[in-house]
Figure 1 (cartoon, rainbow, N blue to C red):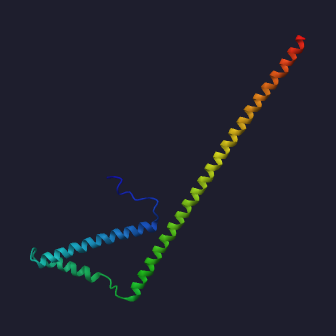
Figure 2 (cartoon, one colour; figure 1 turned 135 degrees about the vertical axis):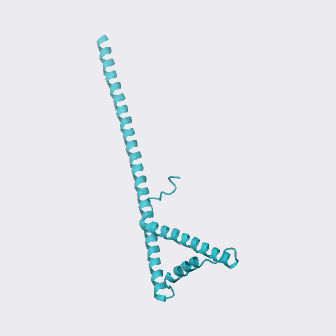
Length: 150
């Protein structure tokens, strides 16, 4: 319950504003549906007519802006397109950065494997050289002992 209201931190400000506006529009839609149901119930005479509520509804609808102007509609469309364009560009940039980090990670892994293989080869060469040196040290000592016996 405590964690369900935490928003995803990786989402940018623009995406947050868009999601907040969508949530606001959903809430507005729910309230308008609630007003519609009330008015339908008043028409069906389930509730008596309350003039105070009707006056409030009239005030709400009178305060709504007139969106019938073509310039306002165009302005909203341009602004919405700008927001969507920025969201798309941000998503592309985030994807490019993710691919870049993936490539860098792969290169780092390959370099680590290469370094480990070099270290392993150097260790084997060193062990082989030490073994050869020990064998050389044993051979002359054995020859010297044989010469002393003769």
